[in-house]
Amino acid sequence: KQEVTQIPAALSVPEGENLVLNCSFTDSAIYNLQWFRQDPGKGLTSLLLIQSSQREQTSGRLNASLDKSSGRSTLYIAASQPGDSATYLCGGGSEKLVFGKGTKLTVNP
Amino acid sequence: GAGVSQTPSNKVTEKGKYVELRCDPISGHTALYWYRQSLGQGPEFLIYFQGTGAADDSGLPNDRFFAVRPEGSVSTLKIQRTERGDSAVYLCASSLQSGRSYNEQFFGPGTRLTVL
Image (cartoon, rainbow over all chains, first blue to last red; front, side, top):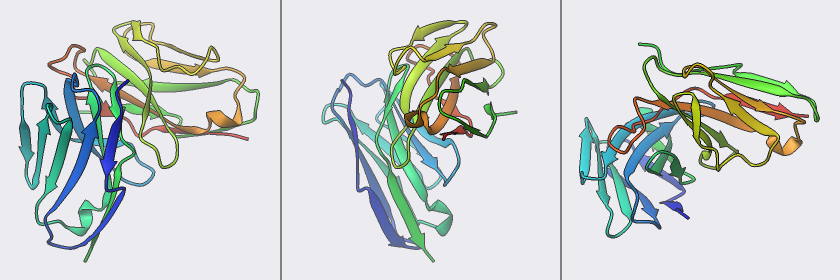
């Protein structure tokens, strides 16, 4: 059974800092790995999808990597801004996604 | 274009009542997923449709939960004899097609269900 763990559970940083969020999974047979952000009381917004044949994806200040052999994915956020404050979730799988509990990020002005 | 929509946004019901939650996927998306999210947790998978058929319903917690997608577009999640433990946010997602290469899922805003 796939289990996904996200570390840290919460993170508070000053504006402008570069940061890394971690996601680990127990089953290396994961096919897709998707990173989302969730604002309070809202649904999930897709940030990046890494397909099985890929090792990383980039979108603006975001970069996500996937290492299936070690069961890890990281989300790198460059030059963080207060607007980046949200909960970040990773989900992995093929059809259905298995999610971690998320990392709550606070970027302080 | 329009994203995934869900109605109602909030539903308050009494224990033992029946509820229906609706999901309108992105137009042209053949795969539709239901998840449930409790406070402080990540979403948990409930059921997934490919077209009109339920391809995987392994996440439904018991037989009080049922979902349909009769025309391959809109889906309804039905919960009978609601219990307080059913209180959660119910999320719907859709993707362009199932199959492993095109599975980016797009989520709706969710329905917050409260069972009193």
